[in-house]
Length: 246
Image (cartoon, helix red, strand yellow):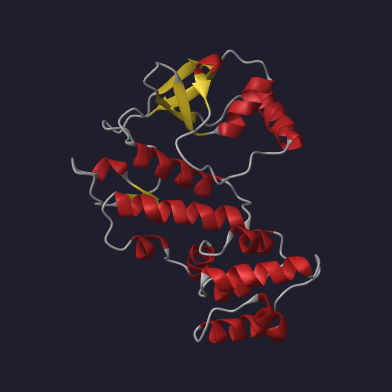
């Protein structure tokens, strides 16, 4: 479920939720404008947690656009220098570039603040991408949580975490980058990552250091993760402590 910017009052408070699928403008009319491709830049305002499509997938998308046309416009915002920045649709943009198209259909959203643009970037990707890695989901939900807080939500986690699966991804966003990468590559199971996410950063660093030193096949199971979590309530765990547990 995505944030409805049409109900944000002057001070940017949170007043409602709806889907971005219709992309409502102030007059509820979607205005699609063809924009020169060489006037458009990628999103650069903050972290973009989503991976770009592979070359093969871009080729496949480009071929589909050749045959069927661009079925869904990209979303852009006008920059202070007169150029445009992509909020959503980077892969469609790349595919149109590959087809040597001069223009691309776009919905221009100039009325949004930087926080709203960031939230829209995350929401559209969460809604439109069918296959996301654990790391992409975790970082995306963390960004969404921060954006909703900036927009005035009193409990942004509750707004997002309607389902257990979402709650788990929000939890693993608290993992250190090394451990989050291990969850992303299935070296550590998602459930284990959720358990470990509750311990302090120093203990997480000790765990990742140990696993890296033991080689690619080294991992931690749910029972061991719970033991680490329990021990970490008493003290910060060193690499030697982790080694003894594992």
